[in-house]
Length: 117
Image (cartoon, rainbow, N blue to C red; front, side, top):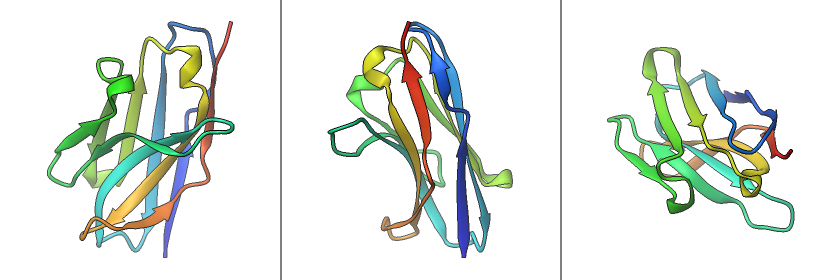
């Protein structure tokens, strides 16, 4: 059983920054890549950034140059540093754990990010 807990969301003004954290606990030996996804009201959930065990990173075009994903394997934690935030970044941000075969296995409960003046 794996628990996934996101934190760090909140209200920020346009141009501001936030850092999200995703902590995994429990039976985590079979975790592969970890990704951040987001879902805005009325829209589908989409990938923001993803990082593999080896550190290979995939980032959505909409956030390239503004968001950075990093991973602390020792503490089973993944971070999403978000800078130059825009109103269109407003969404619930979810952390997803994959197994070693690239299959989605666990989701967190999500953390709300609101970018507004």
